[in-house]
Length: 290
Image (cartoon, rainbow, N blue to C red; front, side, top):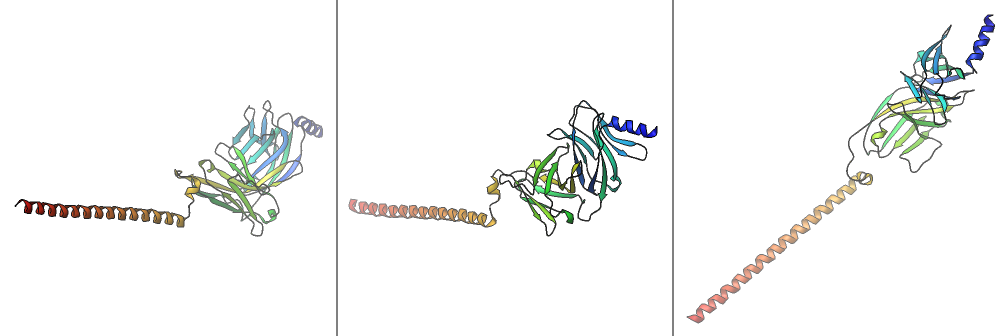
């Protein structure tokens, strides 16, 4: 009878599959399923215990995402059901089930690893218009993996930024991967106020049924200051060029001053000559009269 009851519950709950997911302490993961986000049904994620599955999130809403603490359920542009867990802790390890009630769900076994090169949150400061480079270390086994960078703002809006397979000459973002040193670098030119968000660095892993991104480093960028009225190109004039421009201005001012002094001296000279000439004419006139 007990076996029959378990079998009935299995049929009611829909298709069940199990995947292994590995994250890093202090990092984040995004699990991507082929379950379709259905606004008319309840979405949920729960952590399995010895006797039942304890709900973390369970909701029914027209919203495309819902967050509870470090857990986020949301729909991507393709309409698929995604799960994000941020700032992983060792106690997060275990079995989870997520999906759409009365339809499909998946079971994942989450493992949380400790790695000295991962999971340490960083804070960077930048000024508007500045060019900066953000670097992070990654686990040795990811040397050959394609690396991905996404951003996450305070409203849990996730946006892909760049990856090591994408090259865009028009983007303000560029990426490089030093596999020998296991260091990933992202360059941001002409920093803007909207760049002040969280940056997550990770790799893609294809599981048996659930693929996932494992983000090993998270960096918070703080942007301060105000833009100058000049263009970005003018803001980046080398110091030598600025010195040359200043010297040219000083030279012009000196030349103008010399011209003014010379003109003034010439005027004084002419006035003195005229006065001498008038004085001579007047003396001659007096002598003739007498």
